[in-house]
Image 1 (cartoon, helix red, strand yellow):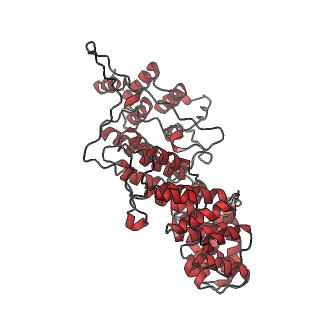
Image 2: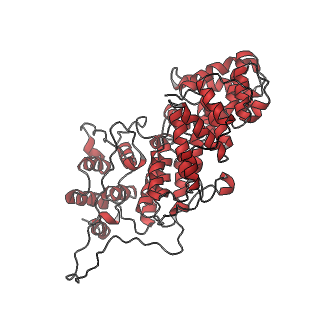
Length: 517
């Protein structure tokens, strides 16, 4: 027999349909807007109630109305890093249209040079004035959140979202999914209950009612949503097994969802059919960092997230050194190599370091983990005064660390290639000889006297500096794969606007890393 609470739940939910998933081009990786759970319904999707009496004739066309308290801060102004910390001007976005900025931010690629990723993070997390046409609805804010989710940077994304006191549906939707991915689903459901104005979709309500122990209300909500067609047909069997695990006895496993959402991930896990996250969007790797996951699973997830700077290198080191590897091959070889190097450095055993460094470097290089590796060991290695090939490698690893300039100044160049690298790290490449065409393109950015290109200059004049920086990020990323002129123009522009550290680190990475394809 249904409780009064369950009937109330159904009454409230009768007008809540599920939204439609966004589509992406074939072969494109899913962006955050494509895999977010359908956890809330926006007012635009809710059917209007029948009028109590005929409407009064009017010549005024009534459109959608948005409301915002007069003293409410704009969502687009929310950030984690002040201008004093970032060095960026507060009016960075200037006159660029919000819709254009949102499109450009979402289009930025996840895989690029680590220094360029770091610049992108700076733009995404900065506390800046909203674009001049901002309407307070958070168009740029949501794009920034989505790009953080694409990068797998859930912690800063959540920190931004938690600054919104009364989140509108699209803000809450992202907060709900982050909670699901980080194992905080009970908190997600609690926030849903505590957030006024949030209308959960049927599948989210079923999940949260069950997590709260109200199984009867959850079952009734499932049947109501199914009857009304508000729960997708392929979601019904999954929710049924979630509510009644005995339905799975002797039955074949459910098909893997075509586009799993964080809610799908948690439901599949709950029914004993967990999804492999290695082929899912990067943010899903956080689900494998929880204590419930095995050591190998956590290691591989941490490596994925480290490539985009989504987690601190020390977290990766902690996993590498958690215990002794009990198997061989794959990630276990990296565990052994990192542990051996870590022990040798701790013991200040130069001979052991010289033996361990080439092995560890080869393994991390194959996984594109060179910069996290350098953050952990670079300065220590460069300061050990190793000789021969080990010393040359230690010097190069040090140039990929935060202390790149100190490492360069302490080194007496052994050959022309080292002299060129020292010139890049110190910003004084006069008299050095670039080793190849990429080096020549980079040197031109540091020794040329010409100002920014006509296109960059126009963007600055039109108060569209943020847009120009996004363009420079694109040019350097694309240039590393082909057009070296783009490398020169992009690096030169970064230097022109005062981003010297970013330009130098990107230049060093272009020479030292294999990021050409």
